[in-house]
Image (cartoon, rainbow, N blue to C red):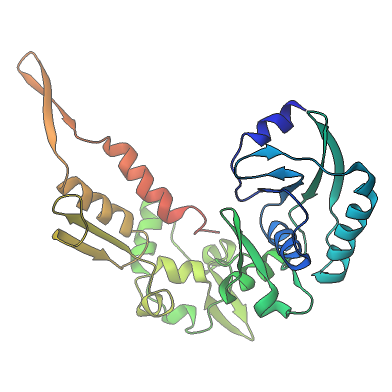
Length: 294
């Protein structure tokens, strides 16, 4: 019960939803599908959200409510979703908890609408229809395939320019980036006798293919005059290999923050940046690389 009391103090979000009464069949199915496609979630019935209040359920209707929920899931959701349903007592009132676990066979969808219109994901505290890109990502999850390791058939690996990556790899590992190494790292794969780069290698390259396939794989930096956007003092867009983008963005930030003197040690001056530069560099690098390299 302590955990339930803590949950009642939380806001609705990606993995949590409250309802005073049973929603419409379609709304309930969308929530369950969105939870299964995402990180799972908990749905509480008998609790008003705004303002948060435990209203409770009629105990005599428990069996009917449970049957209705399981029928909605069985009739409207595909593939099969197995919920965990519990009836709880809090402050002398009865509530129902439906727990949906992250599905192992995504994408989950409304049977009658199909993939394009019936697949939902969780965005904040709401259910949103999944885009074609998100549906493709859910299908990759089903087969345990990451986007980074997918083959890019637009150009052979031999024709791709990734000199920056080669030089960086040699500098960091003291190892030549041979075909065998690229294959081991899943940066290249063979298909019908031709060796192609994966999406990861395309992103690491400085090739024109990267800009064509991934036009948004760039960092845009701007310094504004005042606190309102629109009046630029300086603006840069970094579109080369993602290996160089973080450092270029970091240097942009350094150019636009101040460095002041804190004190002196003997005849030596101790300077300090306006913001912690190590944290700035790590933040930029993490934003670019987490989830990018397979």
